Length: 155
Image (tube, rainbow, N blue to C red; front, side, top):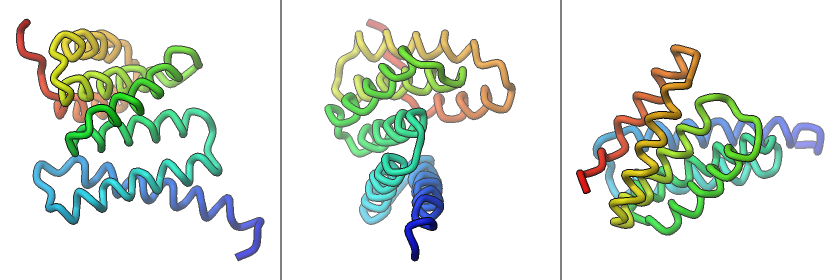
């Protein structure tokens, strides 16, 4: 492979690894091997986006990493990536579905870490932010993923 082909190849791997990780993350049951594959694919996607992506791709990779780490019970790692994505979305121009996704990942991380008040606060912010998604398809994508985030218990 020559150096001119490398960015195209890395973009392909970033997208493919992202899709593998999200496909595995959306399964209700995964084997230990599938958990490892999901973890590896999410990190590989993030790596390739770090080489060829725009800043928004990095933030979306952080959202995926937050989600995967939450699914694996690694709350502190999930919170690190989720907050990094959220900070980006709060300080930069993003699509209207990026902020609700980032908020939901921070809420999920707080759930995993057993922080009920933070879980509730970020969950409610995600709900309100999600209402502002204008495109119906994007809104449905958000809702289908958001329903996988545990609903906060009353405090």
